[in-house]
Image (cartoon, rainbow, N blue to C red):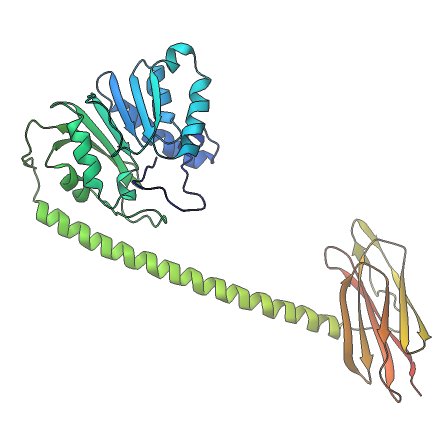
Length: 364
């Protein structure tokens, strides 16, 4: 779920959380999404809820079905349009519980409305100043009410992510206004439930913060290095794969040139073309027309194949036509005194081929 302070000029920054929840983005992703969304809904206290960055509206939909009065706000019109369509399919009793607002959270005037629970799920990592969102949420939550936050755990190189969080970073962000009362790890995400304090003093925790911060800094450096090395290795692998493809194509062409030719153009063993397994004969007919050589092939028994031709002049390849769907071709002939030969191939879609080499004549 996402909301940013300003509109982003990205080709596709939209969230697909509702589609993921209902399995339209793959079953593995569905299970991860459902575990996270269901936990978020379970953390809600009271009857009035604000979902900041509600995206495609899956949380308002689920909570509205359970009788919660929920307001969803998001600045992305495409996500809100999807959410409204989903809510519009619900019974009137559910629709009446859900309000969807297309606006920026920091700029919107809630007219002093207070909530029992505020949700900020997969938002804070998108913000340059996430503390502004947390501070505004604290003003809309009376003491004893709750803020539920989820963020990616560790490095996530999505183009619109501006923050990297482990636990200490989120806890520090919340500590002036909230006390962490619940933590849940979802592999690549972390969820935190925090209770609004009556004052602004940082809560006393049961662990040495400095040690945890140093540990997570080391964790970040190690993960950053591993990811950079992986990206470098992936780039080098792609380069090697491209080089191998070029060499393979070159090898295939050399193979074509080195195919052993027989004198009469009949395969020495069965050649499989498609579903037909027979001994085939490739006939090559040539005709001089002025300075051009006309070449026509016929394959017996007749099977639909592609053809390839190349012209040899004094034993040296001069002209090539690869993978020709037609069985006819014309070559422009060189000057006098040359020995002309044609090599023709018939080949099916699986790469099986039959070839014939034909001496034409010497040009006088």
